[in-house]
Amino acid sequence: MQKRNNYTEIEDFLADESFQKWILLKIDEEGWEEWTLENRQRAKLVEDARLLLLGMKVSKNQLSKAELSDALSATWKKIAEREANFQKSVLSFKRGISRNWLFGAAAALLICFFSVWFYQKDSFSTDAIVSYKELIEENNEGLVEQTNNTEKSQIITLSDGSSVLLQPNSKLSYPKIFTGNERKVYLSGEGFFEISKNPKKPFFVYANEIVTRVVGTSFRIKAYPNQQDVEVLVRTGKVRVMPNDLLKEIKNEEVVLLPNQALRFTRKELTFNKILNITEDPILTSSTRNIEQLSFEFTDIPVDQILKTIEQAYQVEIDFPKEKLQECRLTTSLSDQPLPEKLKIICKSIGNETNYEMNGNQIVITSLGCN
Image (cartoon, rainbow, N blue to C red; front, side):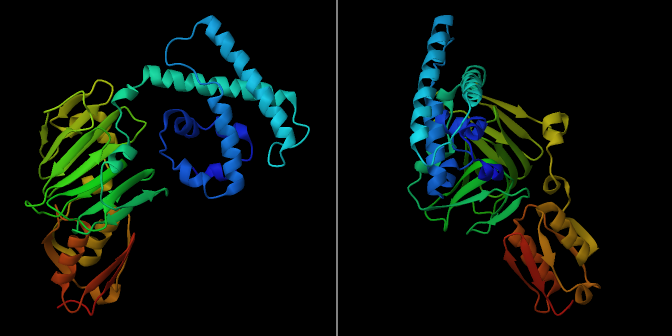
C-alpha cells in the first residue's frame, strides 16, 4: 500500500479497492484511518474522495433500469456540486479542470459501486463476517498490535516464549504479558504459530469467525479478511477449532486436528471441512512454506548448517562467530519448539558461554567456541 503515498487526485482513491471497502464496508484491512490522520492535507483529500464515494451508495438488491437512471442523475448532481465547491477551495483540484475528468469520475464511481455491489452479492454473506476490529474490541486487556507491511515474514516473540512467523499484509494483536488462566491472541492474515507448552494455560488464536485452541504445538492459520476461506494446518501436536461466540449461526461444533491434517472453514456456507491428508490438497500443498517443510531433527550436524536451516525456515539473519564454531557438531531435536527455545537449546548444547540476542529478524550469537 505504499503506492497510496503518491495519490494526489480523488480518482486515485476511487480506483483503490481497499479504499472502497474501508468507506463502504467498514473493513479497514490496510490501515486507512491511521494513514489518513498522519497528514492534514491528506485528510482533506481523503474526505473529498469519501464524500464522492458515498454520494452514490446503492442497495445490495438488484437495481432496476429506473433506479439506475436515478442513481446516474444523482451522481451527476453531486459531481456538479463538488465541482463548484472545489473551485472555491485552495486545497481542491487545480483550476481549469476539464469536463472530461468528470466523465471519468462518474465512470469510476459507477465501476466502484457496482464492483462493491457484485462483491457483496456474489461473495460470502457480510452478515456472518466477524471482523478483526470486532475481535479485539471484545478483549478488555491492553493489546499490542504488530503489523507486517513489508514483503518478508516477521518473527514475533510472545511473553510466554511462543513465537509467531507473521506473513506480509498480516497483523497480530496480543497482550504484552499473558495474565489469567488463558493466553489469547488475534490474527488478521497469515501466521505460523509455535506455542510453548502449558496445559494449565491453553492458548487461543481468534481469526475471523473461528477460534483455534492449543496447549503446545505448531500450526499455520490463514485468515485474510477479504478471502472466502479460513485455513488451519497442523504440523505438530493437536489443535481444536471451533466457531467464535460472535458467530450466532453455528454453535457447539468442534473439529480436532492432528499432524498433517487441516481444516478449511467456508465463510459463505459457514461449514467446517476437515482435510485428513494435506499432501492430497493442491491448494494447501502449493502454499506450504519452508518452516512447514524443513526438518529440525539433527544427528551429528555442523552448527553452521543447523543455523542456516533456521535462517531458511524463519527468514531471519543469524550472525555468529564462524571460526570459533566451525568444528562444532550437534545431535539434537528442535521440532515442536518455538524459535527462542530452539536457540536456547543450541546455545546450551555448545556451552562455553554461548548466548544469543534477538532483535526482530536479527539474531546475534556470541560464543568462546565448543566445549
